Length: 99
Image (tube, rainbow, N blue to C red):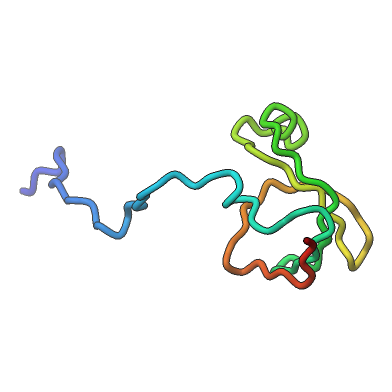
């Protein structure tokens, strides 16, 4: 009969680890989102109205202890405004940059 009380050790697959050479800065996470910038992604088309980089204020606005920033955006399809703490990714695309 096979002993089921112990589990054989299996080394973790190397692909399961995130390799971090350097910490990602808040500016990298915000990306090119400055007030006036228009960008789109899979969720829609947005204009940046404000960027909050004060950690305490961002945490209060987003109600998340891990928040480092908050970006106030306007959805250009329905004119609704809301804050986001989403990081800038490769699927985000600037349509109108502001100097």
